[in-house]
Length: 75
Image 1 (cartoon, helix red, strand yellow):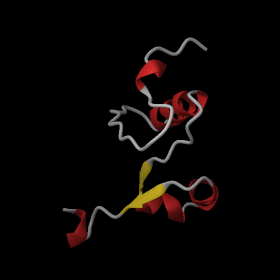
Image 2: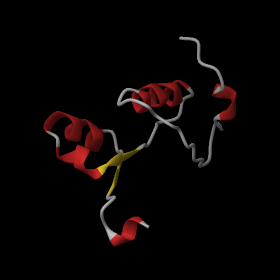
Image 3: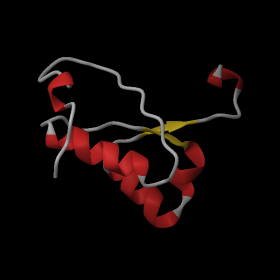
């Protein structure tokens, strides 16, 4: 793989990245990129995806974070 920009991911401490995506595969690509930097990715995902049988199991098992868009707390 030829990743560019890995030097911008800090080796330790917290950080936030904002990544645009045009398809459902883009977050997986970014997660793979971040994992290759030695950091475990934690991504935000639409809460409804956590209810999908296989996808939900994978999201929960890898510690991803559900986003509840339709609540007043979403603001």
